[in-house]
Image (cartoon, rainbow over all chains, first blue to last red; front, top):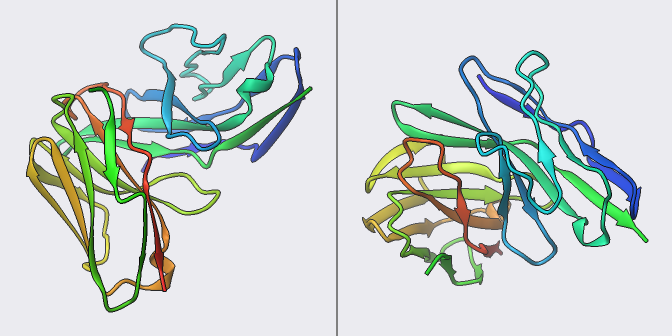
Length: 111
Length: 114
């Protein structure tokens, strides 16, 4: 069984403050992990994935297999970062690729 | 065209109606997905089609019937739904469903069952 947990339902920070959205996973194989973001009235879209190791909109995420974590970080939050963030795990099985989403964290960046 | 398009955007139906949700992509993706999303909840997987064959059915009730007429189209046929089936239904696609490709989502079809 696989699980993705995001302990915070809501995270509020002030503009310019650092932000960290936590994600932990349990998976028996080699995980493929993603962060998806849903801005107000927009479709769910990919923010970043661990294999690309790139920074998108100032966000980074490092896969820590020892701690089974994939926390999302940004050093200086902006108001436009306010959105719903989902951590997702992809597994590849005989049936194809399946994505499982965590419960999500709503980030609110205050002015 | 790098989008997943879903129609209709909104649908209201009675419990005895038959309706369909449609999804289309022209990115050459070979895996297509239906997810159900209730308010303030994450998307829940319903069905996966890989190379036009149903590969995952997450124990979805038979009142939901998926169909993949070709590699660009995905339908979800609805019949005898219950009010608790009201939700946002998301379609997504990924390049081939066999690797680490990302999911591309449509905007969703918001379904209300009366």
